Amino acid sequence: MNDRTKAQVTSGPCEACGAVAVEGREGCQRLFDEILGREFGDYRYGRVHRLTVDTYSLQHPEQYMRSGKSFVAHLTGMCAALETVEAMAINQAV
Image 1 (cartoon, rainbow, N blue to C red):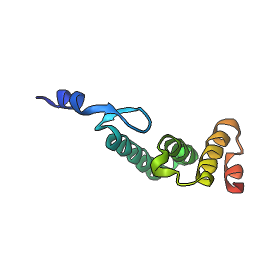
Image 2 (cartoon, helix red, strand yellow; image 1 turned 60 degrees about the vertical axis):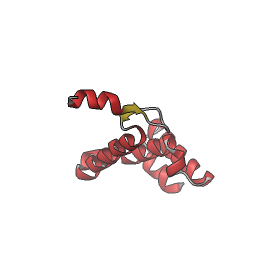
Image 3 (cartoon, helix red, strand yellow; image 1 turned 180 degrees about the horizontal axis):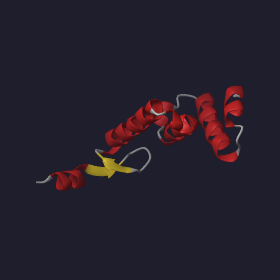
C-alpha cells in the first residue's frame, strides 16, 4: 500500500467538527497545532490568532469549553473579529 492509499484509508471526519483529516480527531488537532505554530512563528498571523483559537474552541467544545463563561468568551471573540475592527478592545473588555 502506498502513502496515498494509506492516507485515504485512515482519513475520516473529526468526530467533533466534521472536518476530514488523516486520523480523524487526532489529525484535526495536529492541523490546529500546526496553524498555531505558524501564527506564533510569524508575526503577520498575530491579528487572526484569537479568531483561530475561538473558532477551533467552538468547534471542539468538549475539550476547549468547560463552562458557559468560556462559551460566551469564545463566541464574543469570534463575532467581534468578524463584525468590527475593534475586536481587540472588545475582547479585552470581555
